[in-house]
Length: 337
Image (cartoon, rainbow, N blue to C red):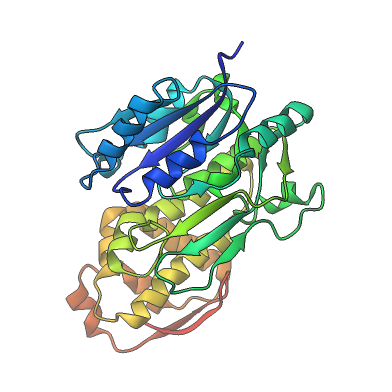
C-alpha cells in the first residue's frame, strides 16, 4: 500500500554550517525498508542549497529537495503544509530541522519496529541531547518528566515533551485533510503531536538518539527576548492555544496569560518600547478580546491594564505609574505600565 515506509520532512534555511551533519545522520540509517528525505530549502542565502544539491546527486533515490528562489515562510506560507507533507509517501513520517541531527544509525528501524508492534500508538519518540553552540548554557537532555505508561498521554496536553527531531508518526494525514493543522501559530510541532495523540497512544523509547542544537540563528534560541520576536510571533503563540482549545476541547487560559506575562516582563525591562501598541495594531479585535478574557479570568487586573488600548505611545506616557496584578500562570505583580 505504501511504496516507502518512512518519510522524513526537513526544513532548512541558512543552515550551511549544520546541514551536512543533519543529512549524514539520515543517510547512515540502517534499515530493512525504504525511506525518503523530503527537504525544503526556503531560499537560503548562505549556500545551504548547494550542499543539498551535492547530496541529491549522491543519493537521488532518497533525497528529494525543493529549493525555493523566494522565501516562503516570510510570506506566511508553511513549507511543511504546502510543499513537504502533501508529497510524503511513507506510512510513517519523521521530522528533523536542518540544524539538528540524529546520532543512532538504527533510530528509524527501532521506531518503525515499535509502531509496527504497537498499532494502538499513533507516534513514538525518544530523548535528545540539547547542545548550546555558544556555550552560554550547559548542555542538557530533553525528554518527558515521566515514562510511566499512560502518563505521556496526559503530559502532552500540558507540556511539549516531544522534541521535533525525535518523533515518528503513524501519519494521520494520508486519510484526513491537512486543514486540521492551522498555519499562523507556534509551536507547530507540539500541535502536530497533539493531533496524533488525539487518535492514539504515545510510545516512548528510552535511548537518546539525536541532538537538538541551540544557536543564535535558531527561532528558539532566546524566544521572547527582543521586540522583533514579539512583533513576529506573539500572536502565533496566542493562536496556538486558541486553536488547541477549539480542536481538543481544553482550557488554555493560564497558558495564554503566561504568553502575555512574557510581554509584560519585556515591557518592564524596556519601558520606552512601543511594543504594546504594535501588537494591538496587528490585531485590534483580538487584542481587545485578550484583555477581556484575562480580566474575566483573573478578577484582579486594574483599569491601568485596560489602558493598553491607548491610541499612541505619547498618550500612554501621560499617565502616571499605575500597577496591576495578574494571578494567572506565572505570578506578575507590581508591573509598571
